[in-house]
Image (cartoon, rainbow, N blue to C red; front, top):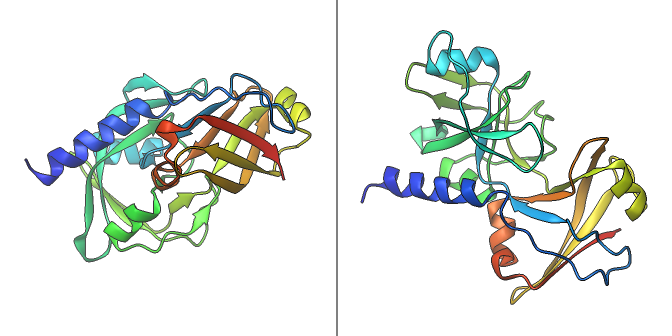
Length: 224
């Protein structure tokens, strides 16, 4: 089996799982997490501008929604691209997430950065100034990003009612306690609160694997 096939299978599996890992809390934490808390592993993915979609997939091309993500209005697209780092190291098929954005961005896990030969900075999504770049290859063209390759810092989406419940506000930090065979406390989750967000923690694949999220028996979201 080719490397490309293996990578495609891995990406497809992770995308399918991206919003399906739901671990109901026991309500015993200091701030009693609501029962609808979702913890999702955000696999490596790409966000593109409208212009870059057309460059990569042809004039007039638009993203094709494949699967809705947990947050309303967001989706995994059918389209994938190749991400190429220094010395021509590459990830053959990386999923695009929609909708399009004002600036293109590539979000990878730490081990993805090692594979590509890129020293990934940890940044909040959208904070790409001064970050490394890469080359993105599509079926119809190539885009060279001067910046925009990051490891997205772990974060929790919530609405203002959730924020009031936990005693936090947008931009604050929280901790996630994962009870499993590899129990960990993940500190400094960035709170991203607005009127419409659903309650959801985003971890990258390295973080999810490190705490054995698939076999977690209890999750606690607490204020730091």
